[in-house]
Image (tube, rainbow, N blue to C red):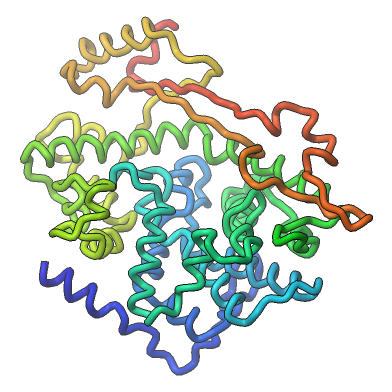
Length: 434
């Protein structure tokens, strides 16, 4: 406890360099300049540096070997795009103060600081019912205390509470700087060229009308390509069936470890991971003023990264519990579950038959069968009609929603939610008939 509290008390001491005007060579955009001393100090902060060890795409490298880029890289790229967007808006006559610019850059820089190990793969697995956006806000607020309130405006922009709404849209909108970077960056590192988007052209077509972002009519085809690229990347990369299988296995490993830990079993775990395995942390604890205060939770969470999970899984592969050792061994060896994907829910009888066969042929205890045979659903919506609409600036100076002016929305594939169901089970059971 004392060690953690000392860590919380000392995190302010960062950024000792006298030369804070650094240049970073990014493989996607080229040279990225750090635009100010405060932003340099934020980047140097240990909580932000931790993102170097959080994979942007979870276990997607099990399918696309090049996909080992980090949240750190993504956040820097999103900041670069934000700076470009703000410069474009200023050139188009939109008044943006220097403090507003700095705050917007900080907000996009820190928008993913709340991601846990393997990003979305373990979302809400370590802290029950809490999304990474909520954790990002918590960490920004804690950092703000250490930076003497310098992040106040950035937090308001992040939350959508700053009076100038278009700044929030640049961070959390249908075509924000977050999405523009991750599509282009993920396409680059996976080699899936269908996801490459013309982020430069989209950004240079930006303007503001009635405090909302608009895209010049000349950029409509680039906007359409962005939406199609997003759809293709979801099904070809983010929801690739082997990615689903590997990340489901990872979640099952952690779930079994949690079950054993809460039952009193002695498990190897790094100190930060041990805190979350042996305690149930959820929304109530995030509001607590006791032992599990937000500050204490944040101090443990910000010591967690991918290495904690992988190092622990290596030890768990030799654990005496047969389920944990088997699941962890499968993960380490990439011996993934078989997976099937279809448009309708799977037949209950087939799931029951697979479960019974797993119990009898693999000697799995009935109460542990859910770790081996399970089904779930995934969905994707290329364009969310309930979110602020992408607006197109027409030649007459008026703005219209993209659905009104784009022929692409005549097709359901863009505006309808697509849901698919998947079924996972050990490859040893593949011989069973459907």
